[in-house]
Image (cartoon, rainbow, N blue to C red; front, side, top):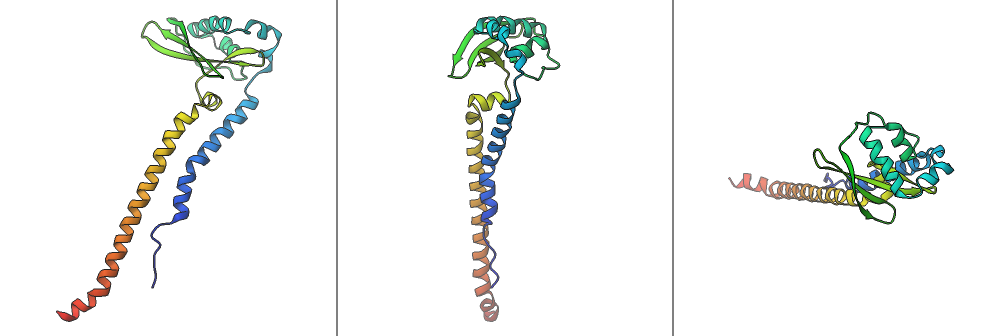
Length: 192
């Protein structure tokens, strides 16, 4: 008798491991970016003295964001990559220190023309403060990737498990119907 497997468990296991694989790739990319991210020219004694405290960096950051000065923002970020196509926000103002989570200090800026909030993340690196923009590196380095990928992974696992249970139930019932009707089918035909 040729019995068909109800569930292909290798396929299901692969789908269940998919969030771990994607997270591993994400963290590997962030780790590699961390190794090559900073421009050491922005960490000399002059920059370390100027940005030894967050207040001077916040003042320059407000000026850079208001004027759209990409070169100044690159110095404030301390990175090799110079931001491109930055739009100036002349109505942007620094409002308040928001929170400190052990690694990053969060500062709130508000655009007074439309009241949009812009959170800026400051971190101390090599004896000076830098600005870290939102993105892949910030998510991985701050540990906030857990609050994003955790719920997505749980949702993914629920979908895979429920779909697998649905397929298993459907195929089990189909096999049961086939056995039930194939065993009794000829007897019914002979009686009629």
